[in-house]
Amino acid sequence: MTAFPKVERDASSAAFFEAAARGELLVRRGSSGTVLPPEARTDPVDGSSDLVDVSASGEGTLVSWAVVHRAPVPALADAVPYVSAVVELAEGPWLIVRLVGDTDSLHVGEAVEIRFVSSGGPDDPGETLPVFAPVARA
Amino acid sequence: MTGAAIAGLGLTEMGKVYGRSSTSLAAEAVRTAVADAGLTLTDVDGLLVSSGIRQDVGVGLAAVLGMHDLSLLNQVNAFGATAGVMVAQAAQAVAAGAATTVVCVFADSPLRPKESSGASYGSPGRSSGGRSGPARGLAGWSLASGAINPNILYALCARRHMERYGTTSEQLAQIAVAQRAWAAGNPLAQLRDPITVADHQASRWIAEPLHLLDCCLVSNGAVAVVVTSAERAAGLAQPAVHVRGYGQAHAPRRMHAGSDWGLVTPAARSGPQAMAMAGIGIGDVDVAEIYDCYTYTVLVTLEDYGFCAKGEGGAFVADGRLAPGGALACNTGGGQLSSYYMWGFTPLSEAVVQARGAGGARQAPRHDMVLVSGNGGILEHHSTLVLSPHRGGSRP
Image (cartoon, rainbow over all chains, first blue to last red; front, side):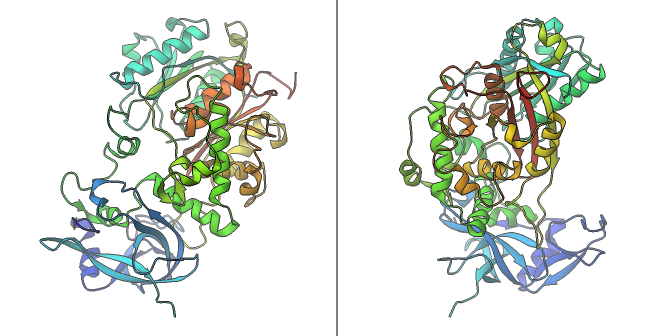
């Protein structure tokens, strides 16, 4: 068991996990120029489904967070307590992500940055996952 | 003014009711509601069905009940907003002449013996959760975020409000404490022992900032209401509860800079629609039956309806305002937090009881205008009803 349950790619997520493995966060950009989360299917600004992959900077700010004490599913039983967060990427989209690192005394608007972690255990590794962490405070 | 009225109400036992299917519970609630109205099943020509966590009751209920000549039959799903959507749909069908007498029913049976509420809520197909092998694709990434059930997602919303407006956990506790006090007067309530703010604060964290006592129950049971014309309702067995207005609004969350997700809900549009149809303002509401999957849902809905200004919900609910004897009779049966969790049929059923003046020990002294809310998704879907014992005017 592990803090990050094993995740496997499927056909539609192969590019996302390929990018994560090389330390890159892949998001989507609509024809209006709006940058959207990875799971987006439609650009809400113009209704277009014509989205392309773009690499995000990995810089963001904290919108909200919750400290999870009760695992929502058995696969996360070894992870609690953990922090889930809404992060606003510098490019605009919000992602719901795991927050790692120093999560004491968080506050809205503080700077966060991307990290990459391995899913699954050492004997049974899965895909690399993008997570976020507060930028080190002085 | 819609011309429709609720003429019958049927509830089964609530809570740890084991050994019965959702369909069996639904059938009982329909029969009880129809009998309550002084009708028989052969008088019913419309049936709208809503299932809950288990998603295991549907249009097949009509055959179970021997309803072989219906003009309207549908399964309705707008998540927690469904009850108000169903009553509005029934009222529209009655007004259009598409049906004369429509039963709306909800049933669910997620609780199993020796299984926790959380496990019941989480179990049927919500997320792969690793039970049947690794999670796949972006859904797997989402699973790893850990924010995969309503407890956690509502905690994210409550946190936003706390950070923006200074709302506190103790203020949320006031909602739970007030509703438990109301539940003491409700024989069907699952939890009737009084609680204090200190009890709330001492209850374990589920997803911080939400404690256990911020979260609703999980229940087995069923509720049905009979919707017909005001004219027909006037001659039936129970005092008519007029559907004076309805509204709905849906805003799947926008995950982008500038989004007000979690801070403002579609209640802000649904409520004014319903009140405009009813010809009332928020100051005319005597009883508010507010969907309360979490204490925070009550607080943000009260703000969005205009009972207080945005951001002032914390101060508004303090000092026992929502408790028995307080300035606003709210969730008078104990709500989903303390009575039973039948999605939007929890506030709807209690609203019918209150509008009839049949609340007994928990009856609100004034009940001329009763507001009912339904909330679904993660503060993304909303329905509102205005119910009244009076067909016209705001007072007898």
